[in-house]
Image (cartoon, rainbow over all chains, first blue to last red):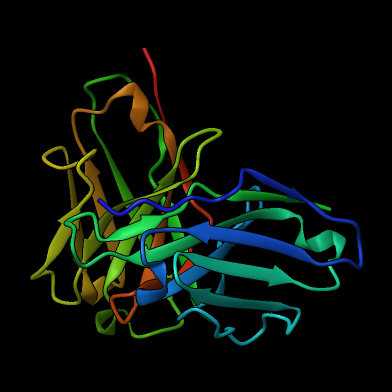
Length: 108
Length: 118
């Protein structure tokens, strides 16, 4: 099955930029989606189809996808952005179709 | 407003059974495929099951195949997960989520905790 790799943690100062990578074999050929998880809260979709933001997600959140790496970027980081972030792809080559990365803890 | 509310979690012995429910509102339930996803303590998200709009297609993760059954009742805007032969490693928060285009999950519930322990 398809495997995604993320760094376990990223630390960023308020007002700075956080960059979270998601690596997978030829991931640039797939659509990548990103979710934000906070303890006790419903997960939130923050990016879909590589770079699109759902309504209500600040423009500070952006993303890209090329080659073997997809990237989520959070600019002007705020304390409220502290959370776990997961990338996800739809793997049509496997019966385990909805694949999540291991997650990255963003600490502000 | 789209809402998904899970229920039915609790403590169960290994080998036991539980049935989770997910009540939805704020959208036309019968138009959307649905998922169950779980997060074990200290672990990441794990997708476990998918069901199409009319229940004609279901998929399961290998970790639950043959033990868990996903179902839905479109008349009552509800999604279910029947969990049999529970194992300690099934301990997790279980989320229901709405499918978008068979590609990603656009709305999620807050989850219900399932604990399997002797």
